Image (cartoon, one colour):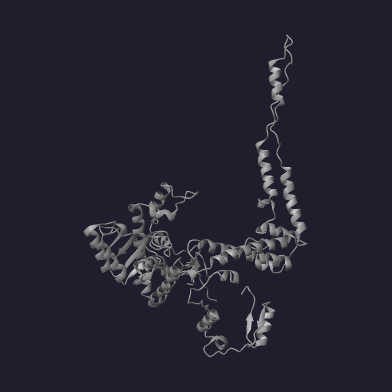
Length: 545
């Protein structure tokens, strides 16, 4: 038998890390150049086949008006130079040269076109001649997968360009030394716009430099071997980015008043579910026992109410002359004073009052606590363990609760309402100052290239009537819900060309028509309410759909 030798692959297969330090020289890393020097640099940049662009901004939401969020710095890097510009310092002539780059150049690079392109879309109304998004291309070319793999520009600086460190050190030191830090003394990057030009400018110009070098030195050699990747990137991916930039800027109109009313409904529904659970005939005595034991342990630890007074021996009451002794009078006065209350006892009494008012969750059975639920469901009610957590504990997830009868169903219903409430409260907060939601996206958001939503993620929201009613179409428009039928199986069929799959998902496949009675049977099996209309159509009545 032939022997087979297994080898481990390097971290990167397509992209080859190599030492590419930041370029230096008279025309590189120019911070806020002025006059003829700046004009020379901008004309040089326009003549370059590729220009990397990086924006520094106050705020990161370009759907906000300019007075609330705006560009405060521009970094550029090209074949013969790099520079950082403060837009507020530019003359009209310098602005025209910079505008020409944004409006006319067809070789722009950005590490995140969704971010940098959003500001150009808002301020110029354009989606310029983007040549590549190095973040998107990084994920598309370096998705082999290894533990801890990341695709940020900072990771590219050290992992691919092999810089000794990222460009964050000086900026982070400035933020911390000027008080822009959290409780852990970590720099608050949201305040970096406050940094002076010599600090922020160096950071920004090195971002642009890294973007330019990442594409030209690391990615282009690979793209020469796989031209279809660049074609897909430019013809499909980048135009798709524009769609989602416009979505973020345009936003979705909302009915905030409905969500406010629905929040109250959810709070009531959660309270009703908790009441039903706590008063369930099998659950109530166990919870009462649990809370009584916790209270008993607390009461046992009551500290002394009064401080121990210093024992004073009673002196003789009378002097030799028969008069009352002053020492005795002083002793008597001290002995009549009430004992001093112990501060620890006062704290204990206040805590007891909080427990009595139900304000301390540690002394109240907590339906949100996995440990509390495990004690009740598995230790006391003896439900069998069918699922475990990653750490080997009995699971209390929705899947695990499904097999626990009416007790499990009450907990599932409550958990779903709690989760939905968190979504709706977030939407209410986001629409406090404007009637629209402006969801963001990560493009690509996964290793496979699938889109991912954030802030808020409207790709994952409760699909209930109460939540969805808060999203409304603008006057004269309608919502259209589109989905690709059996997409995964269609792709699998196309790649495999399996005969059986082709009969189901191929171009010549035919689908049987579902009869009305079959549809009714399917709905009844799933517990979905419906009604048959006069024309024979079936209308689903379940409010959760």
